[in-house]
Amino acid sequence: MKLLRGQLLKFMDKKLLKYASHCVKLDLMKARLEVFENESGSRGVDFIVKSKLGKYYEISLQTLNLENADRSIKIPQTDWNYELPDNLLIALVLFMKKMEPAVFLIPCKVFKEADNRFFFNNEQDERFKYLSNWEIKIFTNGIKELSEKYAFLNTVNLLD
Image 1 (cartoon, rainbow, N blue to C red):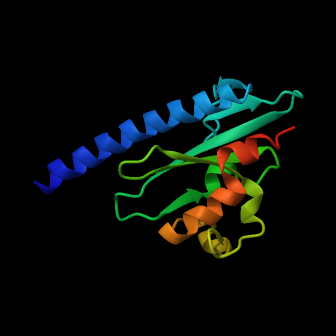
Image 2 (cartoon, rainbow, N blue to C red):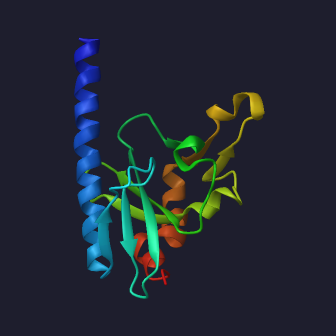
């Protein structure tokens, strides 16, 4: 029974990821940005968008189903080659019961100034560097604050 539940959760996670991808692409197109699939094979980058002024941004899609016990996302630093480029954005999609998905667009530079409230830089020493990650923690009372700073529409309008 436990194996079956695990398989069901993996299936549901894949469906949510596909749905999140669709939502983010639609939102990006509504913002009149050109959206491209990442064909380069770069890990940690799901889309590339071109702004109205011709600047390119890489988008990393992250999802979190708040119906599960998980309240954080860990992004391995190896995915981005231990770097936080200025043109890298995180499209965070939160799923909550009986609500439309909440979409956030977060510049990855937040990890440079990790606030230890939502954003954490879990850098390890050289010996365990491969275990380093960046983490986003979500808590119910903080969603409003996160929305004020990083709601999709707020951030996408700042792209040049």
